[in-house]
Image (cartoon, rainbow, N blue to C red; front, side, top):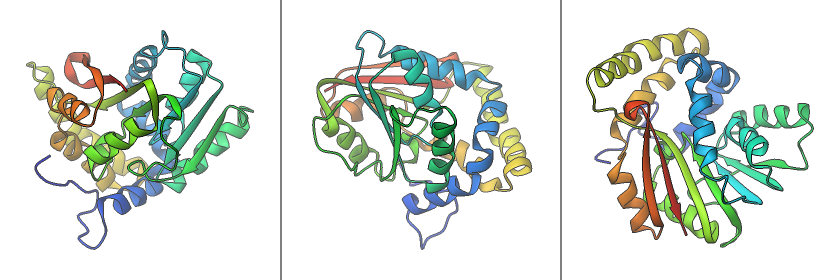
Length: 243
């Protein structure tokens, strides 16, 4: 990544601090806008990412940058693990996740913790699988974050990363760019009252080392059998790797 993209261009605060503030600011409207802006396709993409773990039958899953917990709830249904632990840097997002957990009576199977995704508060070799949905591009140091995900996985455990990428095919590339740069920030401002959060989205995607570059980073920190699967003409991608 050539330069660090931050939500608020505040030189006094680190990217980590700004990302936490941003998600605290938009937490109450995050779920609605996620589904609305993606036309509901984000739900399909999540299911495809979770299906990467079906054969592995993981019992203990760590969901990094869990946010309001949507990915973890879907994984509970599809994979039936004994437990999922979600970690996130935003207290506001976790408050929403905890409300959902209580409402669905899932406290025995899904718990969330406030924590830094790049310095995970867990021992090494503990999890059968680690998932990250739309979170890695917010890492302050991507390589450190991937190395820590690799650290907490059990030998033979799998990491599954779902993240936006940059489509290269005409006219998808042009339509995607227009939607992300002009439509998304406007709708985001209307509903969340935080226009910068939704301007940061296309900026962070543009700066993110997707595709082969991301796979190269996974390889560098020690993942094996790394794979890259583009979805929807490359709007989104699933990355997998084994410890």
